[in-house]
Image 1 (cartoon, helix red, strand yellow):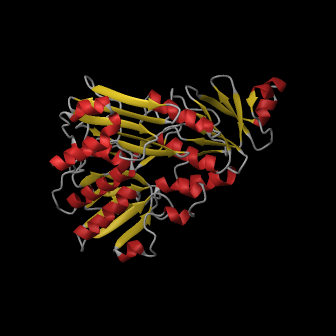
Image 2 (cartoon, one colour):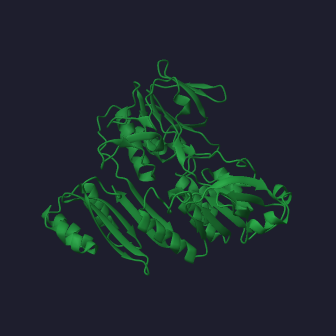
Image 3 (cartoon, rainbow, N blue to C red):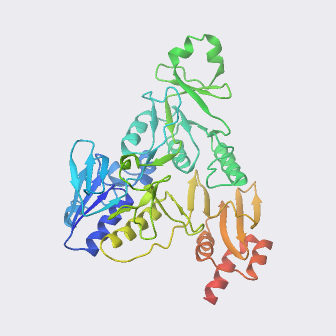
Length: 433
């Protein structure tokens, strides 16, 4: 049996390891799309801040780790898939046959249609190579513009701020991290960042990126519009839809990601914003499975399918897929939408249906001065979602009650009166169980 794992992120690595445990005799080939050993993108910010070297991002650090397990590793970018012939075509012209295939190709950054985005001082922050380029430009005192204040953008924000740059964040939404925070919470994070010296512009778009030479050709009026301009040959001008012009040595683009599914065109595998999989991580093609950020897996909260682009979900996807590839019959219980973020020392988190459900109820408590906030979302007497700012204690209890689908009974009204009693509610139902 030849197992091929296409993608060497957390989902792919965990899948390869699980396959080896489940099938000692099978041949396993792990394929990575970058000229790097398998690594974690979530570790890149630690590399940016200098806390770890590039090697510190590697998922498995022991020398010869994959060889020891009998896992073959090769580099290649998939260009096509023939599910009838069970053959993968790679960009270098080579091919690879499989008996069972796991697609764990992850996602790639979205490239907005903005003029000038191809300039050499503009980088995404998605790969180790991106991070190396950013390190050379994000020197202390340099002017940096960060496009996007979503989850990934806020992680990059912290790393850039810790490098001592003059940072401006441009977010087209009306608040920071709009896909995990409601307006109260997202605005609180913005105000916190501003107290730390980061300029944050919400409800603002970047129109174009221009060379300083082009701006100079407009005369002195162009310079008067530029904010905190360093005015040297290494800068580019960032034109905003407000009319303001920012000068920057570096522009970092964090405008979202999309699943890597283009190579599946003509393969017959069903996709819809990601590869559609069943509860066993099987795709619509025989002997082909999918896992991680490329897969629309089962959602615990909605009972539908969605992409939950977080590392714990990717790892569990990979484990379940591998067990089923090896002949076991293991059903995936579903992932919980969850995000925990540390933004310049302010901890924020959201779980489950944090923005509520139709016909549901919500309760919140807010302390703007202390940067503390808690919002609970209910459906009947079940806690289905929650948002927290400035809270590190009892967050596990919040997640636990949501993930267990606990019927709160009289504790619902107690939490409505005092949402901070989340720990008491958790303990009460744990003892009942």
